[in-house]
Image (cartoon, rainbow, N blue to C red; front, side):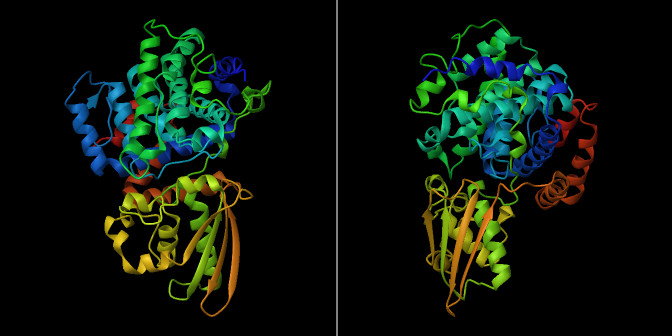
Amino acid sequence: MNFDKLLPQILDLAALEKTALDAVALATAKLSFYDWLVVSCAGSTEPLAHIMRDFIASEGGAATATVTGAAQKYPARAAALVNGAISHALDYDDTHFAYVGHPSVAIFPAALAAAEEVGASAGDVCQAFLLGAEASCRIGMVLGRRHYDAGFHQTATSGCFGATVAVARLYGLDRSALSAALGLASTRASGLKSQFGTMGKPYNAGIAAANAIEACGLARRGFTSALDGLGGPQGFVPAHHPQHDSSEAILPEGSKTSFMFADVRHKLHACCHGTHAMIEGLRNLVAAHDITAQNLAALSIRVNPRWLKVCDIKAPRTGLEVKFSYVFLAAMVLHHIDTAAYQSYDDSMCGDAGLIATASKIKVIGDEAISDGAVSLSANTQAGSHHTTDFDLMAPIDLAVLGPRLVAKAAVLIGAARAEKIWESMNDLDSMPAAHLAHYLQA
C-alpha cells in the first residue's frame, strides 16, 4: 500500500494558522490541559514519581523546564520524560477511541517543556497540543486496529508523532525541519502493551514525550533524517504493521481543517478507559433494579473483542492490575467501592474473599457487534429476575457539563482549593506564560 501522501498531509495540518483551528476542538483541548495538570499533580507522590525524579536528578543538566513534584527545574527532555510518566501513573487521563490512545500524557509534557524553553504562552501550548493530538489520531487510525492488537501501545507510538508536531510548532520549525523531526521520531517511537499493569505503561508515555523533544531538538540544529520516515519505504507505518488501513480513507482531500480531537473522552474512574462504559452501565443497572453483590446470580458483560487483550485480567495480583480487570471492577461497583478514587486500588483487594466471590459470578464476552466505546450488560438475580442495559461512552457530552465534572474529579484528587485555583487560571491561558501555569506542578 502506498502512503506517500501521509507525511505531506501531516505537514499541512501542522502548518495551520490559529484561525483555522476548530473552536470546539480547541475548547476541548483546554479542558484536557486542565485534566492533565490535575492528574499530574495527583500522581506526584506515586512510587514511580520518586523513581523518575531520582533518575533525572542523577544526570543533572540545564534548569529549563518544570518537573511535577520537584522544586527545581531540569532539561526539557528530562522534564518531558518524567511528566509524561507521572501524569499517566494513575491511568486517570483522557482517551481518544479513534486510535485507542491517551493524547494528553504523551503530548502535553513535551509541549509544556518546549514552551518553557522558548518562553511561549499557555495558550500556545493548547494550540500546539491540539495539532499534535490531531496528528496522533490520524496517524493512529492509519496504523489501524491491527497495530494495537499486535501489541503496540498507541499512546506511545502514534503519540510520539503527535508530540513531535506539537514541539515543532512551539520551536518554530519550518516544514523541512519538521519533516526531519518526524523522520527521527519514526526511528524512536516505541511502546508495548505488555507493560500494562506495571510502571512500564506510564513510562511509555514519558518516552513518547521525551523522544519528541529529542527529535525536534536535533532537527532544529540541522540533523538529517530519512525523507519520509513516517509512510515512506520501510518507514514507521509499513514497518510496524504490513497490513493496515489506507491513508486516503483516513485523510481525504480537504480533511486538514476537519478536527476529530473533540471526540476525546475524559476519565471519571481511575482505571483503564476501556472499562468505563461497563462501570457506568453497571452503576445504572444497579441503581435501577437494586442489584447487589449478595443477590446477584450471574452477570454477563459483552464488549468489543479488542478489549479482551487489555482489560480482561481474571485474577489481578496488584492494584494496578485491578485497573485492567472487568470482573474485579464490576465487583467493586457491586460492593460500592469508589472506582473514581485512586486510593481504592490497593494490592490487598486482590485477596479480598468477597470481591473474588463476586468476580466469579461474572463472565466477559467479546462481541464484534459492540463498538469500542460501548457495552451490553445482562444480569440475573437469585430471585430469578433478568435485567439488561446498554451504555455507549461515545455519546456526545456538553462541554458545559464536562467542565464541572472534571473540577469535581480534581477536588477528590488534589483538594477543592487547589482544583479551583488551577481551574480559574484556565481563563487566562492566552496571556499567561506557560512557565507560570507549570508552577502548579511544582512541589
